[in-house]
Image (cartoon, rainbow, N blue to C red; front, side, top):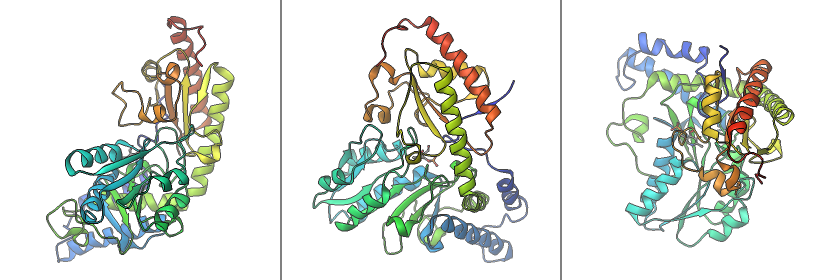
Length: 392
Ligand code: PLP
């Protein structure tokens, strides 16, 4: 049976070129990068090279890149680190209602255990955060603003430059979770004016279990993982050398192929949306209607009268992999906080599926997937107790 993977926002396959770069760091260049003899220095060279490659993808200085175990760690570190570093200045953080749980749950932890106050900004019906709302939420206790670059469920690309300018005007640090933006939208940290930015390798055809934080020179915060002097004393723990080298290679490929990757994703996403509209009734697109303002590969679609989980399972039986919400919340039946925040009507919110195409997706894959989808939707609607009622 044909297998069609349409969940590139959950994770991407590790590209062969990336794996090829990584293998020697397991088999030959396995020295500890902190060791002073040659095998250690060779491993250290791999880290330095990767740091440059990641820095180049976002227009940073390599000294501003610190490797972490994942995007989640980078997000946790920023929120907890800045809360500690600036506790004498204030106890207020501003974020949004549509962040990834790596941000939302850390904010809730800080509220519960560290006396922090957190404002979760509303978004409009396409998921955009307004710079005016942000400015209105700032108080003299605000120490950090954290707003994601690209939403993982509905693909909204936030106006980060405008939002960061508001933070700068008030002398407040600005962090962006760029896990979904990296390799999918052009990023130049200096042009955007951000102070801190989280990244993850497995969303850009790199390995899992490796991420990074961009920390602008001059921004201070305590270490999050305590121990040895790795990462210039900023993040302890023996480095995941092969993972870091893989991240570097994936970042280099993402930079070189950025335009081509975006064009390919956009073309297939448009093709898929056209096919869905042609073959299936009662569908609703969630997130920005203007495709130039959403993640180039993302479609988030509600199918009236039926449930996303059932669609997912029947599609899986046909060899097609999709997601009902963000990767991390699938498996739970909670209503997506993102879809609730953009006010997707309750009657259709449960019938929502996220499709994300990628570099290995072909038109034939889309034809196969949409045919399977049309059959699945039809089958489910035939047995749905609410079919025939107006969904919205
Ligand atoms: N932030 C966003 C927006 C994400 O989409 C994800 C993963 O889905 C993360 C953070 C977490 O990244 P990681 O899987 O590297 O921990």
